[in-house]
Length: 109
Image (tube, rainbow, N blue to C red):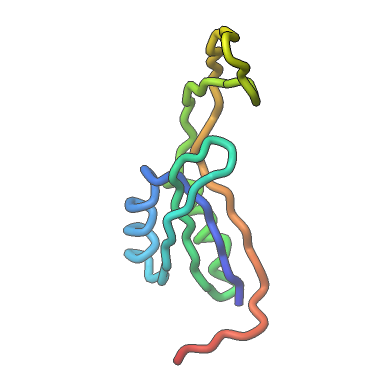
């Protein structure tokens, strides 16, 4: 058995959960936030048989899309009276980060 943890953009989460459930997979979701942009994500947990991993990863990949987002950068510390021009840059966000872990034991109570 494998435990799949995937961190996805919140905009992709509901459609992805629908696709996984429609295909017979059980999913648990948690609202999370990324450390870099502090934006809301959703982390999905699912447990599958070894031979199902490839299909689940494909479903995640097919339903999670990267986007370009503009972010501003601030100096770590601003002193009183200091002026600062806010610089913006584009970064790619979204897609999915997927972890596939071995399951030592699976119990259902």
